[in-house]
Length: 267
Image 1 (cartoon, helix red, strand yellow):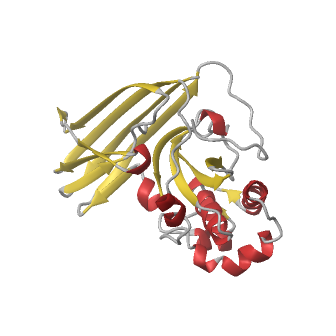
Image 2 (cartoon, one colour):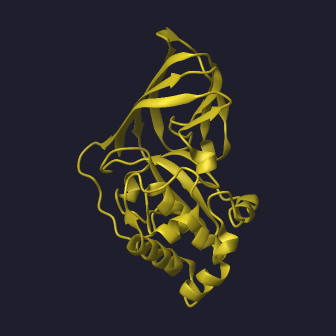
């Protein structure tokens, strides 16, 4: 499989700050990635520092004074990534409640809704379908600080909200789950996308309650507990405004099909 992805963004910085970008394709064995990253502040090229995060995540960080920051990133991905490794620590860490996936608030509710399903594969399908039918996908309907409880009560959200609720419910029924930001060929409207990985039958399997893009075509960017770990842009101390964001993601040929009852891994 050949996939082409990219992003162009422009940020206005009104006070000096420190920025983090998580837009580069994750480092994973089994795929060949050809990429280019360009960062300019007020028309002058700058070189961000790349920091290796967990699960192949790559963080590009830079101090930035006032002005206009322009970022362009393109990548070509050939092949499919090998199944991500599973560590004993991950299986513990991704059962814990987190900032936006408050699993401890769902224990009783999740047991009532999903406690009758014994195997993890069935749980995966049921939770994904339940979230997909209970929530409406409504751009602009949620706040960046909303968590899974807020999303359930409002009944609407965007991909990150769907993902947070899926993560919280799966953790509440003792299925380790984590959030992944991805490039998603086939997504409409095109943007960064957020999905879930759950530990099922010895592997990390991808869950997408929105069903907006085929899971087998997804390209991993960042992996973590929730949106606090996977945001494409983080700002520390200063004041910024995002003026432009354009994301692209396509496959060579026809998009693959997808079915919610199939076990799929991000590759």
